[in-house]
Image 1 (cartoon, rainbow, N blue to C red):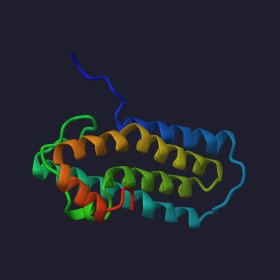
Image 2: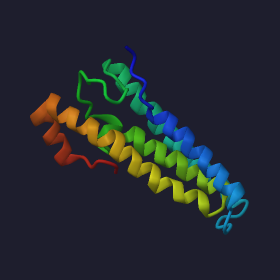
Image 3: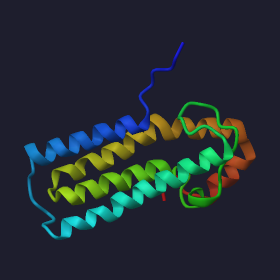
Length: 149
């Protein structure tokens, strides 16, 4: 039987859709005007790069990137020295970049909701699984590296 759980990229896509809808339906206040909106490309690209680097680390070590699947290796190098969950952090940067590019206030309301959902639905479960699997190594890593940044 296949697992039909909704994965983080789907949540990211839905968050982007909601941000766009809020921007066009309820733009509230324009907080960033052209040409400054173009600066949103910086966090957008930064978030994409973080995700690519983290995904490549999973591939290189040949462990799963999918939530709820058991990891074979605890990754503590590269971007994982900065954040225990760099892919979720990258997704938040992507949303920040998109909000800046849109320039209105309402899309920003999606970002903290997205971060809270990622924490509750994925991060807490993943961290419990990692602690069960890697025990002392995980606790040592957890003491050194923050959850988000």
